[in-house]
Length: 104
Image 1 (cartoon, one colour):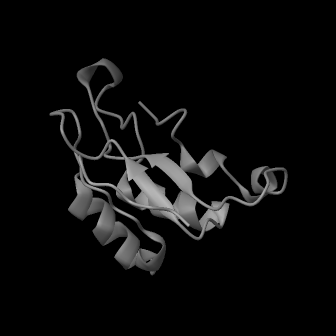
Image 2 (cartoon, rainbow, N blue to C red; image 1 turned 60 degrees about the horizontal axis):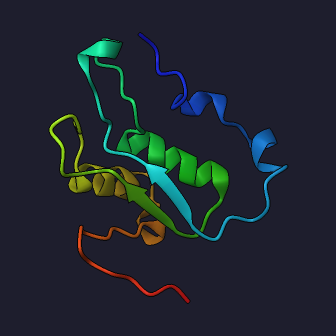
């Protein structure tokens, strides 16, 4: 089964042209998988989240839903590695459960 709603290939620059500047992108990552969809990721993989960050042009991204449940097939370190590999780690903000962050 092919990714549907999370198919980053369907997100292209034309979509970004109609969206205002994005200061902070909240992306559902963690590559959640279940047998209901033949193991296809229900949320973004780390690589797809990095690609979405590049397409959206957001200077800061906070991946959500990357830990805490068994159906996540990627954790925070997988997401971080994907951002490093894409040269986007300077845009990545990881906040652990219970941790706070003050935005300016």
